[in-house]
Image 1 (tube, rainbow, N blue to C red):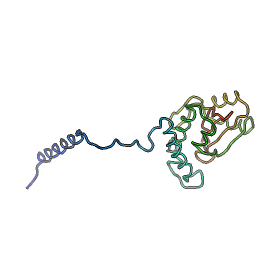
Image 2: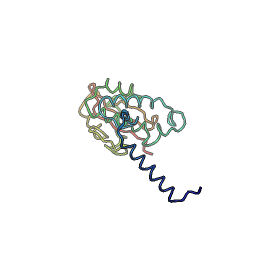
Image 3: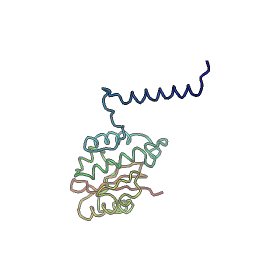
Length: 189
């Protein structure tokens, strides 16, 4: 028995109608959980971001002796996005040094300020919002904010977290046990 084009269209129409009716029928299914890399909101999400960051921090990549890993090494990759989201969480509310350490663990480097090393790092920071994968620019972000925070305090230090080895890094000003400002230090290639 030969099917005609008209028969195929009729079958397709019936299937579409059945699918639409099924999707309109209420079900007792639980709501879907948000995607693992969904945008974060609030302290519980900061903890989820922290877990993601800590796993990505351990993941091998091109800049720490491994093979290229787009999630770890790529511009706009998951590690960079998660680090920026954590920075927004940290700078978006009063955060202590201990709170930063709980979220991101021990920094890869701590540089005392004032010092020649501190000045070199600050001069290399990007301006607020400039060259960011997520266009994230919270209050206290960028070279100007970091410089201002350092001028307003004594005994500050820079806590530096590597994104792609020592190639590209996330920097926070910690002074008086409070996180004051932050920014990206990119190699600028």
